[in-house]
Image 1: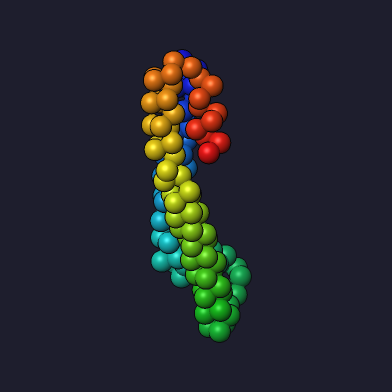
Image 2: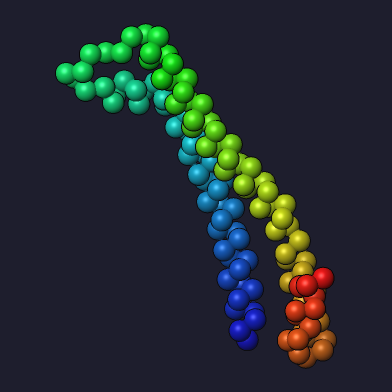
Length: 113
């Protein structure tokens, strides 16, 4: 049945989005831990070393940026998780209605509510 396939795809996509946001948030947090190493490794040998003040400011800025990106992913994860929390219950209701009535028209009524 086409409805069943679409619902399975939707639920799998929702699961994958949440998994990606969790993974990507963790990845940005790890980047924040390695900011000083990235600055030291990025310097070209012929380029003069930045002053200590500039280096500290650069580290703070990069760390703030990476933590901000992690925060964005965490908020998306929480928001989507809350918004999608009841989807499985709605699908279950629709499945029961389809089984009881034997028709697909009920699905639209259940989802609209």
